[in-house]
Length: 170
Image (cartoon, rainbow, N blue to C red):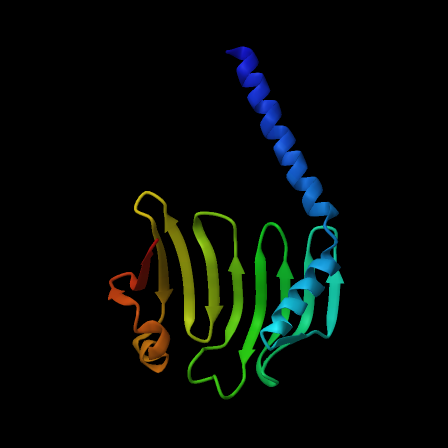
């Protein structure tokens, strides 16, 4: 039993070490330019003011997003790393302002509770995963005025005593 436990621990260690080496060894600039090339095939263009490719992450500043040569959004800062995806000050073009609210900060984290956190002109939004019941639960702390203003998004949410809740069963 002891040798099985020891070999199991060594196996987990080597898998973890392999993952870390793989993350560090992947050229981040090639990953970014490949992604941008694939998006351009779908007529989506990303223009950045400043690109910084670190050992473990990609940081972009002054990102403009275009679809079919029409400006859709501006993102002040975008970070992609193995531990999180974060974007700050997402401002949508005037054509979309009545449909999608501006977002001050959004984080996507690799965890079960609060894996998506967003704060914006609409209020606060967080989420969790209920693995046992196979659900993703999104909770929005917003006012009734915001819910009616962005009805196309929040009409799918149920109003409860905790705020507005959306459940997705997978």
